[in-house]
Length: 165
Image 1 (spheres, rainbow, N blue to C red):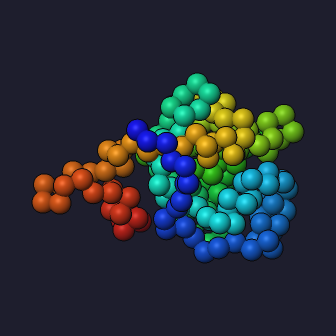
Image 2 (cartoon, helix red, strand yellow):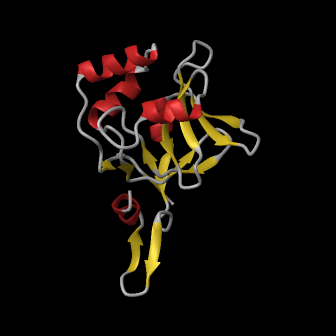
């Protein structure tokens, strides 16, 4: 496992303008932390070059970030699907567990790891104190996110995932 000093993203959606961010915040009646906004201005969702996050209690796999706007899998769509009060889902892993950022005054800016339970509820665990800590917690494991193909060896399986969407 290797710490990723400079997290970059592949296959991000179209870049966001300041107007896009303001419209998004207004549509949900929230204000996002500055570090989150700055990140999304650079990378509007996509697949990071890191695939694990080491939080306060858990080490969690990571697959991709949702886009705010311009893309098939947006934060707004996931917010409507999950209906989590005071939280916005911004990333997911391959086992359908979410990373969410707090938007209420009691949890503002904190990052949570959220699992849907069989009883239509959620298990919610504080993962990092803020978005910058979350980005700093990312690292890579060379075999997570890979599929072994006999003729090709280890290949990235997000290529297969995005081609089949």
